[in-house]
Length: 242
Image (cartoon, rainbow, N blue to C red; front, side):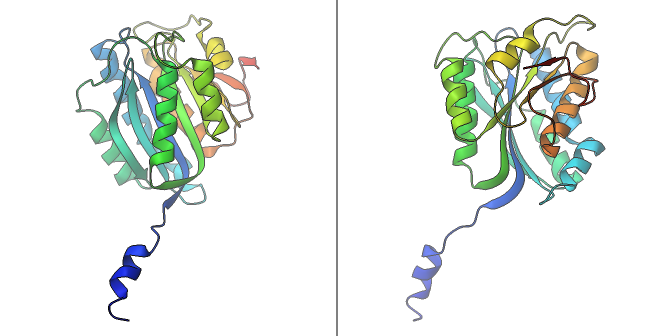
């Protein structure tokens, strides 16, 4: 029996950690995004993930934890911060601190379909079990210049039971106020799945708030489906319906 013990230990299954939400943050790093905008986006996410309202949303869920990874996409995709379980202010601060220093790793023209499929792969290949699985896709256009089509990739992601939410960046380096059709393009072409929604960012002043609001809605998981929201809107104030 003593000789069998090592074998039994090796054969014992590894139980995946359970969290309320597996969340892939796919951030635009294509050629239209400058280095300062890369840094601004990362700072916006770092600020949002440590916001007290976001932390309260995490604590209020069943397991009191979420798993997050931050990936920049362009012609290629690059993991900036690998999967991190956030269940406290300390773990959120650790994720935020890891997000800011790395150099830009993705570049080139848009490959949105490939980015969505990479988000799916990252969710399916990790050792975490999420009660919900979401890809949070941000970008400043819906152009797709290489790799799988958006429609093909989106269908594959949704078939896997993964929701896609959108953060269209109408403009980072502007004063805001003018809204383009990008949010509607994201609704038609990008988002999908149960409760999918769009939160639009239309300037520096609204970007961090858009990210904060989007994280809260994703963590809470109780937004009515098919909503497009401006950064400062409440869930009941819809810009458009699908």
